[in-house]
Image 1 (cartoon, rainbow, N blue to C red):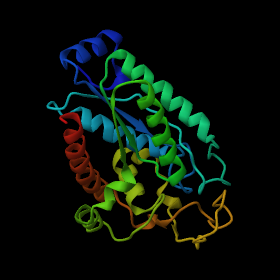
Image 2: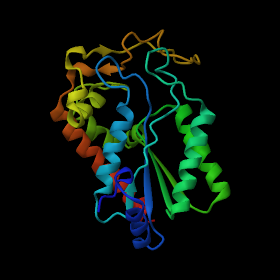
Image 3: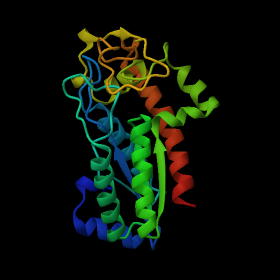
Image 4: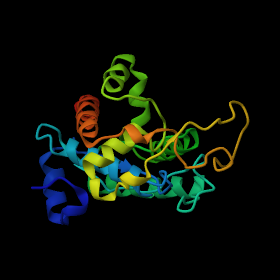
Amino acid sequence: MTRVYKDMNYKDLEKFIDSCHGTAAVMIPIGCMEEHGPHLPIGTDGMIAMAFAEAVAREDTLPIVAGPLVDFGVSVLTQGFPGTLKIRFDTLKALLVDVMRSCVAWGFTKLILWTWHGGSSHEICLREASLQILSEIKVDIYMVRGVKLFDDPAFKKRVESLLDSIGDHADELETSIMMHLHPELVKTDLLVKEYPDLPKFKIIDSGAPYMKHGVIGDATLATAEKGEKVFGVILEQLVANVRAMALE
């Protein structure tokens, strides 16, 4: 039986949750509809988040379902480019609260918010939605942020050893992963290198004045081979983290 929410029927879901005897976990992948340079699709974050969640759900020893996907996020730096949705903080918070309430109503006792999209406002929104749920319902909620996995120096060094450059958005890492997952959606003739001079202390509401291409990093160095290796390393770390949460 598949353990991907969007592919299950309600009987599948009911059977899985019952089989976990009160320990069922759901990993909610969270993306963002925003520009990813001229070479990557607007839905990149959600595609990557979903791919990792589905891979985690294939681990037979984990009582976990992947999804539902929340393909929206609070974005600031990518504003000013066509395609970037301007989702309000309260809108995303309300959506997340409704999704989590539903998951609890079905019988899940552990909720794992897995976001590939970063940004401080976005992360605060996820935390605020979680705190609202915790004020209403007794449930375990965890948040795993793709960008924060690199806070572990050893892990960061391991990933960086597979790449030739460091970036933050639509860069070598993200482009390589997308070349591995969805090569048909990557426009390899439009790969660019861009390291914009972003203000260090000024609060901004758009990155467009500072970014020409909507990229932070060097996408020209990306390859599908690098993407496959990086995906594997990140997945290994993610599975370890999720296992600790699911079995806690």
